[in-house]
Image (tube, rainbow over all chains, first blue to last red; front, top):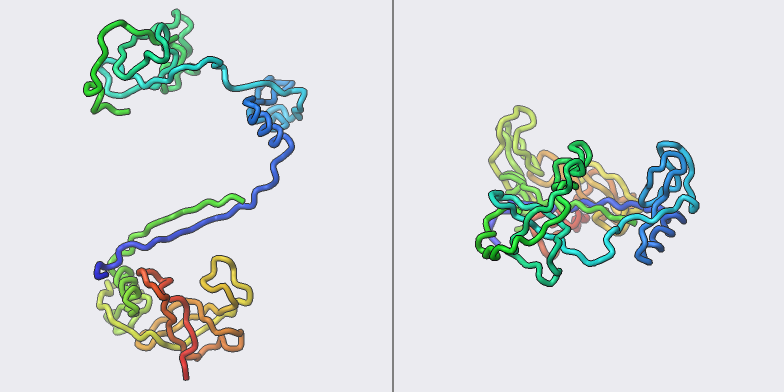
Length: 159
Length: 139
């Protein structure tokens, strides 16, 4: 070897001793293994903590198995998550809620249009959108029936 | 146990780069300042004047222990897995000392003034660990 040394590997590692999981943590994991996500609902303020902490830090009260609630997955049927390129845009949106089309028929290049939520149900600016995605404003997306767009026309856009 | 790792790759620059390149070839390279002092390991600047120091010079692979601190129970991350000494070694031809492990076997041998030499690693890569440790120089 004749090339001069220009770089040096510098490997640093930190090891942490992790405490044994709490009984509540073990219970949470056991329920996960049964495809169930649980939380604890504070008996005073009603906030739900997932994973459960065994207490509400705001009200400073203990929460127990009596406060256990089911959380998480609302979808019970298969659905499609799609990356959508709006006409005239170079950036894409992640969307769900394709309607009027079987999952097996969803494909790259499929043209869809927004099904807007009724006026007044499109979420508030402060809580609904937060600068990401379309919030609740669009209920779903349905095929327009127009011919598919070629894959090449989708290239060169920012994903 | 959780392990958090930081696998950095650092750019070493022309002076430390030359030092590490030398180690890869089993040579120790220092730098001579305008005042004539030879620093090993080399600095990029003369610590007394701040002037760039760029005259690279070879020094010997053997020298003398200036200070030593005995380590009776090495940690997992130490360079040797048996009791050893941390030693400041001034190599012949150098005016400053290099800190490294000294495999001297017992605490009473970890003394200033002891002649030592480099034990090179079987395979060198261009890293300070190419010096496995220092060992007593045969009489």
